[in-house]
Image 1 (tube, helix red, strand yellow):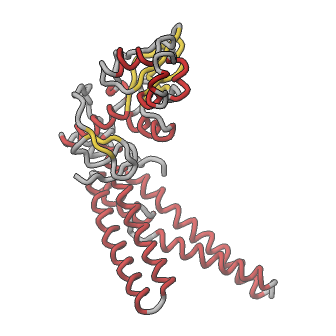
Image 2 (tube, helix red, strand yellow):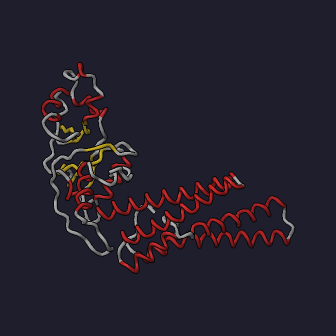
Image 3 (cartoon, one colour):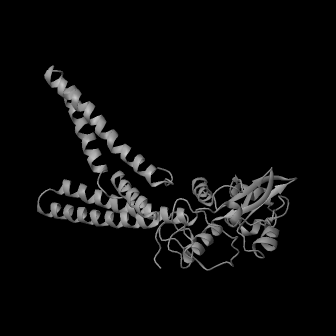
Length: 326
């Protein structure tokens, strides 16, 4: 699933469909295997049908383990969510159960490695690690998704956008913009047409002795492609789009005009602010009203996993969702 279901009943139905399909395929292949045994079909065909039935049966049973984010864990979370009405609380409980199960699996795997079977024990350890890692990642995604629930790009974007002429030099860009303002990227516009986005990274790629003779238009090729969104786009979708397009900012367009710009820093600030204030959407029906956030530039650190910029004190990286060492 690419996004969290907005209804616990829907999550249960979606999650249970996977194991049921596996059991259905296992039943069909098992029936075909039985018929092939009776009719003395060729051994390779019989073996293929038998192994197919066995593998799908095992897959169905494995996915029913109440370990989030496996299908069984999602059924468990959906049941808790439906009973409590609290998605965050249900996710935390499901994650805790998953961590306990995964640790037991890894412990059992290590014992098996030491006592008898190295290969089977290693597989159990890997499966336990997979469940633990998946549960923690899903919890982070859920927390970030619920934190940004109800927030749109228009709530975050900087409305007074500085645009750059492609005809000024890179030296002028540095002295008049990067050294004066806090922004690390600017749209380059000529006659109302957006040519690209020039960033601090693109300036760094140009040798210092050539910056006085290099036009911004030439530096665009080292910058980011202009990725445009509408102001009604959700903040969570905007974050996914930044990650997918590998850019640090999105240009906000309305009726063909540039009306704002939203950056990773804007998303980091709103995530940190709403988490600190506890402004997290707890049920599937509440729609919080989000004021525009205007905060000063905070001290940043580097993400322990992806290396992206993270505000000091943030629990999670807004780029990859990794838990930070606070």
